[in-house]
Length: 78
Image (cartoon, rainbow, N blue to C red; front, side, top):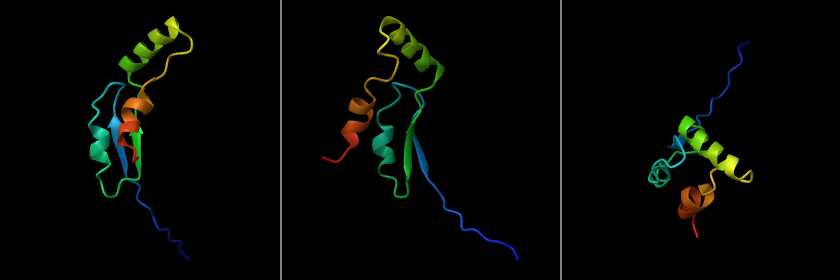
């Protein structure tokens, strides 16, 4: 007997390709009717070098400090 499975499609939107990428992607993606997930890629080589320089100056840095305040917060419902 052959087993059948139902496949569920997952829709993923890419909101950035590097830290500092366009801020209009997330609002545009939020209008997509079937979108399940939004991802932000802050691992581009340029981004990693900027974050490493910040970390060398201050060990508490080395990450995208404004991700929540700039990229996410303006798009949350009040």
